[in-house]
Length: 144
Image (cartoon, rainbow, N blue to C red):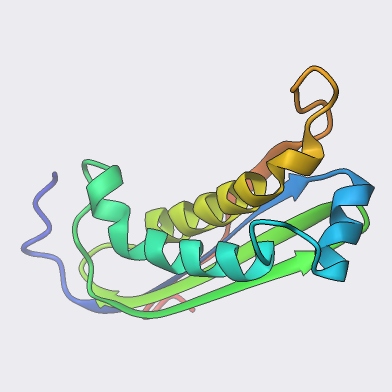
């Protein structure tokens, strides 16, 4: 890890987003509350929050950061679900990796609970795809 001991503690915020493309029939099942493993939106939200807290354990060069706020939103569209995470901390280093980890974990949790409905007759996932995971915005005190 790099030495951040001389950097000042400032308020930092990062917003990340990504999408999972699903079959329309799977999204209908989600809307009806008929996913056998549970509500993908609730499960993804909890997974996303947990992922923020565990970021330094899975990204080996990340500093542990005292997270002050995590906000996770999932938006359903006709053939996809978009996850957006906002992470805030007062720290010497940014929180974009935590936000990206959050979104990634949210989307993986959605995939996990709906995979039964996404598979084709050969057990493959021809339509299921996680895409466009990126940092939407990053803020640092003094640069808003």
